[in-house]
Image (cartoon, rainbow, N blue to C red; front, side, top):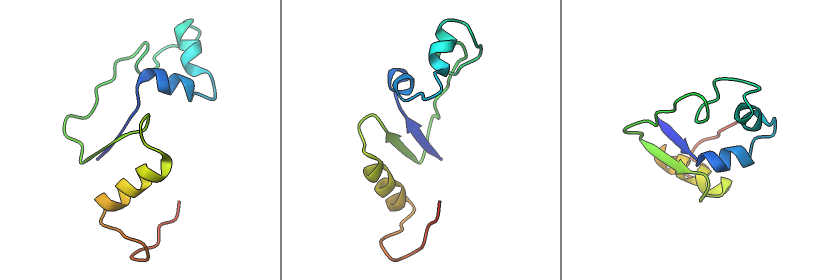
Length: 77
């Protein structure tokens, strides 16, 4: 289990569809962290604090956790 952790304020800044803003004005309902509860995992195998990590750093941590080094495996997204 990988916990991609970002503060609510960061999630709101990254929200390209404006869903958090709509939730704040009650235009839409049940947005996690605003109008619906969120319970973070208790014991994730890896936690990525994306407000402090670059994409490259996060990817490196995932690959390290999977014990994949350069050339050891091919990953496609």
